[in-house]
Length: 208
View 1 (cartoon, rainbow, N blue to C red):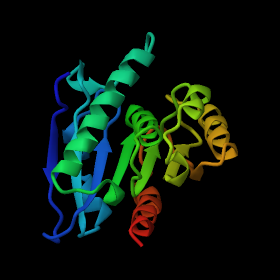
View 2: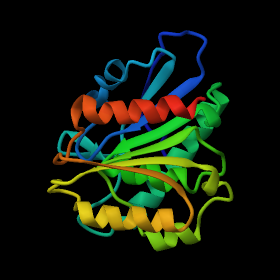
View 3: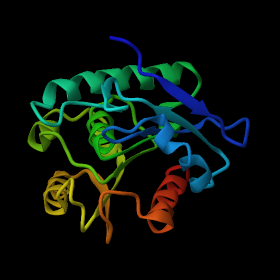
């Protein structure tokens, strides 16, 4: 399995080992998130932007959303496990690493974060959903209940139905997982500074 293409954007604080891994949505790429570090305005945070493995109309995809998505989800999950292991080897401790994603990237971040056998600083899922939540809950990692999740979604999302994601998140919360849920009056996007402030607050508290 080929390693995922990624690009590290170093923190302004050169000695920091804090890392935010950002996974893009369908048809997007590293290029779509170059604005993210500056917008977050957290000088001690390094960023690792990652391209999904499959070509998709000029961008990339984490899995086949039109057919059976499960094989692609499993393959991308394994690739992210290897990426996280590589970051540990590179000196970025998992417990100082945030794993985040938008849309497809949100699904993968939740999938990986709740199955990976090491505790992350946090998991951020934006405008996405959960792959086979019942199966995920049956296959959680031994430390999944120590993971902290932030999940945000738009009331007017035309791509990923709001009610479906809320129901899935409620399943995760009912199982005892630590999920912080925020709703925004937005379509399938990041709701500017309003939502960034929520993400920034979650990330900052992850390092207390």
